[in-house]
Image: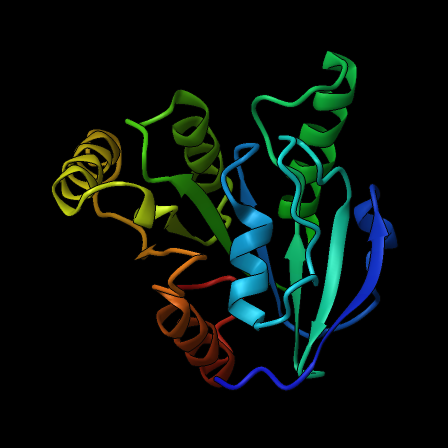
Length: 203
């Protein structure tokens, strides 16, 4: 897939106020500081499309971006640690889950996971919630350039093992690096395949 156009459209905290459209949406979500904005910018090849910050929890809205006038990339707030009041974090969690539950043109969620760490409870809980609620998702391991090949293989095996304790089979997963662009072609190819097959909310 060649990205010819990527532009910001709308930000809000109410799924009812998201763009009125039948165009497919692909959402990106993960723990705070997982490298979501850097990954999004790498995928679309636009340096400043998503705002990158060294401070965790910077994204606090549902952000819609129009890609090639064909589909929407949706940047969701991170969960987990953020320098914000607990009430604010709970509010984000509520509207994220509402968006994921009611948005009928949501084709797939990319759940970002920091490859440098062992399986995190909030990552596992969030993916379990999506599975129980019928939200199609793929796992995206980020920041793989920050650790050795041996350590990466160990961490991936650990995650797969933990997931298979409660899942019959693993969801699709990708290994990525915003620095080296590892995984870019694979993720865009995955999106293109879904668009071509018109597989709404099914993988």
